[in-house]
Image 1 (cartoon, helix red, strand yellow):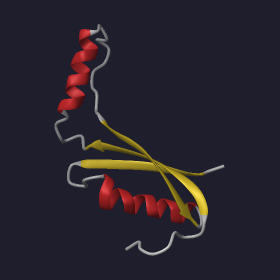
Image 2 (cartoon, one colour):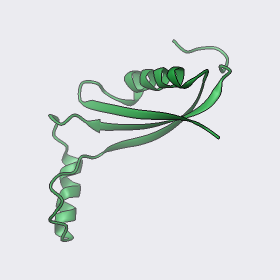
Image 3 (cartoon, helix red, strand yellow):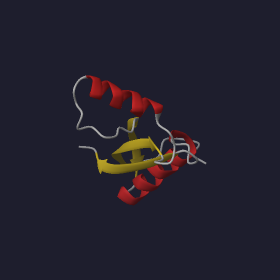
Amino acid sequence: MPEGPVPDGVAWLAKIVVVLKRVVNDPQGQAIRGGLHDLGYRAVSDVRAGKYLEVRLLAADEAAAGALADEICRRLLANPVIEDYRFTVEAEA
């Protein structure tokens, strides 16, 4: 459980995408698809809506940054019952 002072380490940027699982109905995605069809974009066959987040964090190395990003997703950003998530981490300049 993270508590206490801010850890020392390298600054990392975690780019996180959270989407509903394929088996979960996505009314927002369906509405977007309908709007695109109304605008004439008939080639669009499916839309899944989700959320994109950028989280800046401190960690000793890429593995630690990835583990922290994964923990953050599991504990707060994604509901594992209905959502999937993926992320990348990159060192900040």
